[in-house]
Image 1 (tube, rainbow, N blue to C red):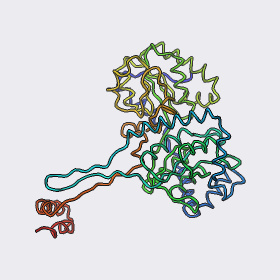
Image 2: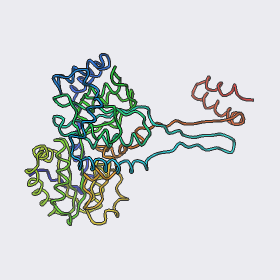
Image 3: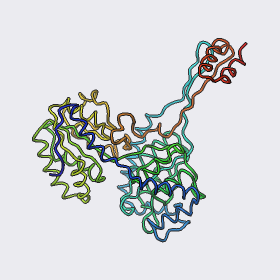
Image 4: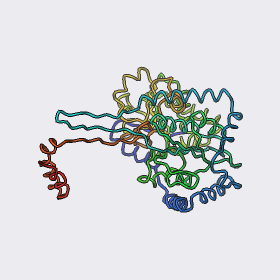
Length: 434
């Protein structure tokens, strides 16, 4: 069987299921120390470290002149991609930009009757670095991730955006990365990968200026580097293994459900694909379809490994219990594959993104519809949100008070300061009293 069977009848069953799911998150201390050494070397040696690491792991003939992608290389990319593909990329960018425009927050302030002015200034960060994985040998670039990270930064008003991606064996970047960057209006592009690329974006080198925020997915080395740099730069999030939960009734097409589960499972052997249903026959039919369809996939071996280790058919007695399960799981992606999904939306408390009905599979959101596909994983949807325009902004409080305010409230402020043992704070206010 391609995945396990689990029965969930209520909260008493959750601890064991949670223990199983948490086994996917197992930090490797060896990676942690390796990444620490890489970041230290990049900080101290800059471009020389980037060139050395890139020669070792990506392009044996790499040299310093290949770090920054030239204007000529960017221009030639258009000749190497299909015009129809470019039209699809352009439309996806428009959809994603239109969605994120609604997230823009305005600066504001209020004036009190006593003359005080209080407010909040919302401003973009100055510079953002985007990491774009090259995929298998640089031939399956994550162009959707570049769009999902670049667009909210642009909508936020970020003036400088740098893209960095590991080169192919010949030292070039995939033309789809370059053409998509051009469509986004990004002209600052570098060829480097893994933890050393993240270090370059954080610390800067002679070639690459340091960034304020770093965003973009990557392998364990990229994720670990971002985690180690928290506090020195802003990051989008530290993403763990991905997951999808599908809450489905007996009217769901088992072939569709299996296809949706496999679309997540093919990502990574650690990805988790879980069907939650109160229909006995659906689970049996979906298992058959999973094996049948996986055998036809180029990444079928990865998908089957993912399903075997982290996939499940969760049997629940009814829809309400199924909703309780997914709220406890807080999945990255949640599909509501049953009639009238809108009737349940008020009960869903924790999910990174919710896909409504039989005709909204997860890839609709991953690539095209508009909402961001960078989502909280491994239960963190309980307290965190999708990547957004807010990721690339900072908020500054604005405070104005006059003499009358100080005369009315200065004594109270001084008293609070002295309760904390901070005499200089108290005197700072009292020196202004009249």
